[in-house]
Amino acid sequence: MAVSRSVLITGGNRGIGLAVARAMAAAGDRVAITHRSDAPPPGLFGVRCDVTDAGQVDRAFTEVEAEHGPVEVLVANAGIAADRLVAVMSEAEFATVLDTNLTGAFRVARRAVPPMVENRGGRIILVSSVSGMLGATGQANYSASKAGLIGFGRSLARELAPRNITVNVVTPGLIDTDMSAAIPEARRAAMVRAIPLGRTGTVEEVARAVLFVAGPDAGCLTGAVIPIDGGLGMGH
Ligand SMILES: NC(=O)c1ccc[n+]([C@@H]2O[C@H](COP(=O)([O-])OP(=O)(O)OC[C@H]3O[C@@H](n4cnc5c(N)ncnc54)[C@H](OP(=O)(O)O)[C@@H]3O)[C@@H](O)[C@H]2O)c1
Image (cartoon, rainbow, N blue to C red; front, side, top):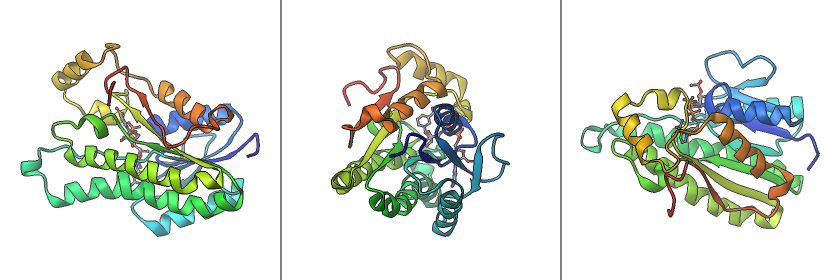
């Protein structure tokens, strides 16, 4: 892989994805992000893409390939939550979260793989969650999607290891972003009390872990599930 790599981060217009994009751009990579509604953040090359639409995924990759060359590092970060207790959760609420978080990652990884195989190398990083291992009340859809990413990632890691492509999964705990801001304060305080380090994580801390996994020092790392959770998921 080149020193300055062509990197694509889905959902890179805010939150964890934006922090990863900024960290990788600062490290010298040629960074592209996907965005849906907003304009891309200044200084980053943005492509419009909804990961629930395979046609949009294909067009986004084609645009990135024209601008930066074939994607060498893919960070599948786009995700949503739609929390509700299972007893009152609609099938659409379940399916939409799976379609975005899990099938969305499948769509982008599938599109990324053939050029990586051709280039004899690549890095795929999937953004899962500690909820995929612990489960969470009101998050059966979200937790199922995030647990699914671990099985998907490990299968892909086995498929692609002979091609010098690594696939790893990061599992953030509670990180300060728009997504976690939606958690009611009492529940949030209880969650923080359960974190051994006693605090939430920052988007920059997640970004630094992703940077390591995507970087040259992680050449022997594949199929790993890497927690950035203050110890919340310890032992799982
Ligand atoms: N925050 C946490 O505590 C936490 C913990 C563990 C894991 N995570 C995971 O980390 C990832 C990023 O989360 P975040 O906290 O940064 O959330 P966020 O601030 O809500 O950002 C989510 C990002 O995903 C994008 N996205 C959502 N649905 C999409 C779709 N269908 N197609 C394309 N992009 C889509 C959003 O784009 P728009 O701006 O267009 O909506 C946005 O860029 C998610 O996978 C999340 O599950 C977060």
